[in-house]
Image (tube, rainbow, N blue to C red; front, top):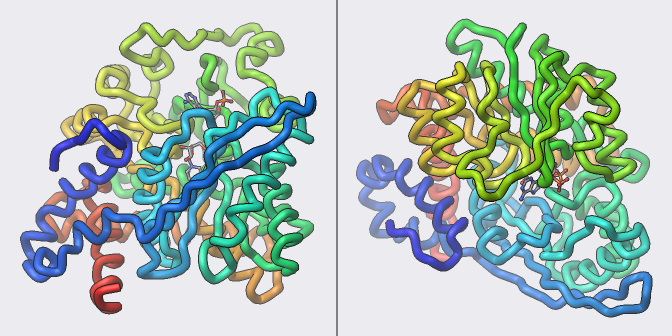
Length: 441
Ligand code: NDP
């Protein structure tokens, strides 16, 4: 399968899955006859639309909106919305494709989709973000529904944006339904949803460690990003006795040799979620830490060059290249658990697998977020809210089960502890078999 110059990220994601499932296709000639590869790589539906909105000065802007409804074989489309200037159809298709396998692994009945816009919320007022969200939902609302397609958050779409999107959906449809997840607790959200992706990343890491008779206790971790996933990954690492020494944003990263403790993490949450500031402000508050500005001329990211035991990339796709992976291995890292979607390039993954690194791919390690979104949908349907302990224990159980599923699938095909192959094979097989059961549709 050759990478095309078009839709690079989408082709990268497809190539990775197809390489893993080659032995499955060889073992099942019927799959070839049924053209399952062509069917699973083609979205069921792609929706692209104009989003016109007005800024605080009365200037009109036009952005592009997307929703890729990738696969509904095992449930309604489910997946987040991303608002970031780098959003293209390729990015949304890769994310939707990944989501199909991830959702399949969660044990819940959810198909895969993803959406978003090239709108940049950075530096925009609350009023501008609200008007953009309303304009976006003015088109999206006709394509989604609690039994059809249930969006959630992703980069640039947090609690504030979900609120504005939900408000507009409710007004247009005249219905109060669980059409979005990641809602505020007061109006249909689930406890633990904000924490779920990050907590899940660490639960998955701890499952991988346990498999080799190890724990997170006393281990030093490199975390990238400082948004939702990075914050709760850091929180859970601290709770499990580990140490976090880095965090970043798109402008640069901080290295705090003393460790980012609970108080410092509270500062980061306030800085990023409330003040919407930059991570460089961390060193103004904690001068012993070092800030390094992002340098696009470098062929590697110095964040991944520090001595550590574990790495949790939690910012964005392709943020960790082959050279970074080599630096991690040279500096003692033996575990990588991905919070972001596809953060490691194919070359980086090869380095991890060649060096026997415990490598938890995003579609398995970060599935906790969508899993708790599934639990939010279940609570909405029952019009009930489960206590924090119950949701957290279900999340933990789901991450345990995803880990076992990946392990068993990799063993079945003679690739023990290759969690990437295991995740792709298990996710693929379940979805493809459901598609075949349902005939040519
Ligand atoms: P947020 O918007 O909360 O945070 C994103 C973080 O990554 C910010 O620190 C941001 O920096 C940084 N970042 C974003 N784009 C880039 C870039 N191009 N280069 C460098 N840094 C960048 O998003 P989330 O934490 O929700 O998402 C992070 C990753 O996790 C994404 O890959 C997402 O798809 C994935 N994910 C999220 C889930 C969720 O439940 N939220 C579920 C599963 C996966 P800055 O502040 O400068 O923008």
